[in-house]
Length: 208
Image (cartoon, rainbow, N blue to C red; front, top):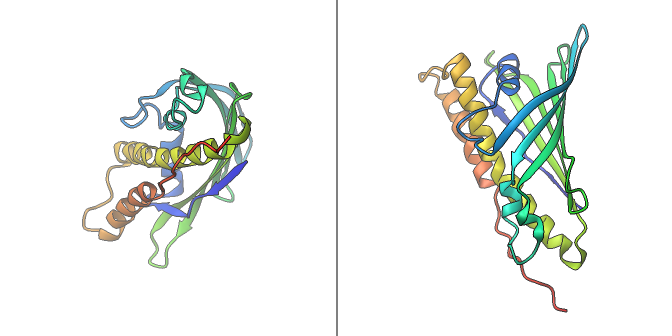
């Protein structure tokens, strides 16, 4: 089993704007692999919205990063996942939990993402985001190698996830004013930090 937590980063938009973009993030130019998205359940109270979705994806790029000679995971064509989200109006937080619901005999991937309201000292509002993932593969002696490769793939996928949400934010609310260089720098930093999270993993078969 392997765990990974991302460093905290920020969207240069308000919490409510980020939530609106999150709930309407598909389709976008950076998620061509999404086949369908269906709401299975939604519960609304005075201060919370709890949503459960079924999202079907083409064979994940994360799985394709596993060398073909290492695993039949590369042959997976579609991956249905359950996404559960909890929006809390009072705490200004949105927490999502995502897990695969098929091919569990090969791997289990559980992702947690937290979006929180943040106010800067200059009075501007941002949204902090923190991601974490837990990957468990039971494929014998090379399981730890598979897990390392899938963590690298997960880190890589965050770049497109971030770009997709930015695309929706700019569609709905427009780009942040160009004269506000701090906001532009935050966007560039967030996308760049997602790209820089990828580290090299060398996969070598263990000696028999």
